[in-house]
Image (tube, rainbow over all chains, first blue to last red; front, side, top):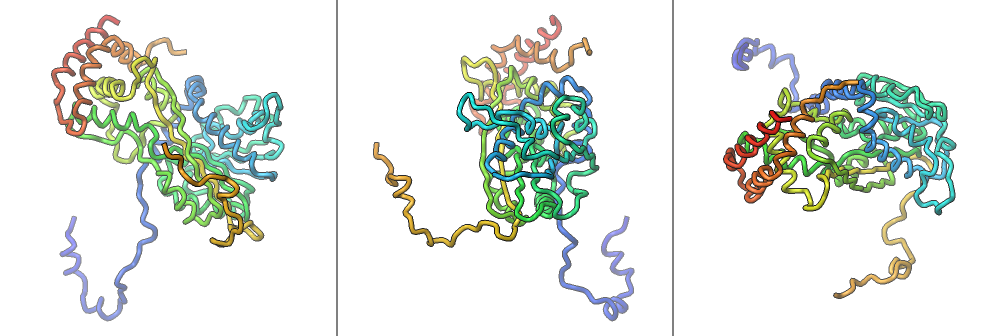
Length: 354
Length: 59
């Protein structure tokens, strides 16, 4: 080890001044925050998926979100011959695409065909082989043409530019360290005027657990350490998409509240989903039993209704749609160019006084 | 498939038998949750833990 001072005095000064041109500042590439430990995440996903039975049992959340994501495809009157599922987990999107009657708006009793008519081919890309190939023997694999790609890192995509007619992503992007860079890549691999549709956990997901864990940590050990990941906020998502060059953005939020018998069941399910904590500087080893016990008591006191059978856990989904720029793409009109008053169409405009 | 119960299931089962103690501890922490400090509710926690330990021995 040596200090900066010794390096400096050891350098031939005259030489520096004469031959080397120095700049006032030089940016060393893109600075990047490492928030999540990718290796830990990979291990967690692999380990979770190897317990096939448990892992299938806790797919309720991923299947539900995949269905809601695919429902958004119904609004686009277009066929997508070649689609990428980014961070496919166990190909939940492919499974949702083969499910009939996705259309919630369809009148009751009218059956709508599965989306495989619009999307015959899908490429599923994921870092965990065990998870990606978990369900390859199930019947839905025969109804849609799935290609499974295992890649070492979701943050560098091995695809060529202008390759896909749509990129979908469900419940994977919340583990990405460098979201702006990933969205840039997504924009590149899309064909012009093609959509990216994503769903990710956002901001207030598991706020109950985050809060009660902090209180338990504080009271039992006198300090806090992160147990629930930081997540992107709704208001950041719009600017992220914008920065990556997407046009005509739509961002919306939906809460899914799941009831669990106790916090232990909640944590067990998260683990079986492969969604346990993977923050860079998390504490090694399991949580202390004292903190778990304290957390259970605090969670119940804060969030359980008196006559409820279980504790609620909120999952906040952020859905986003962005279109790659293309020729002849519909553009928003200039501000102030409208000649119909929205008030005439929607009526009202005044708040009702109580 | 695995017949042995996982440690966390044992904890959950034992903890479920101490709802009165847990409620007392929870109430103590939440009563002043803007200024929680270490061992603020040590007495209540020890009661909860005693109950929990007794319950886990039985089960």
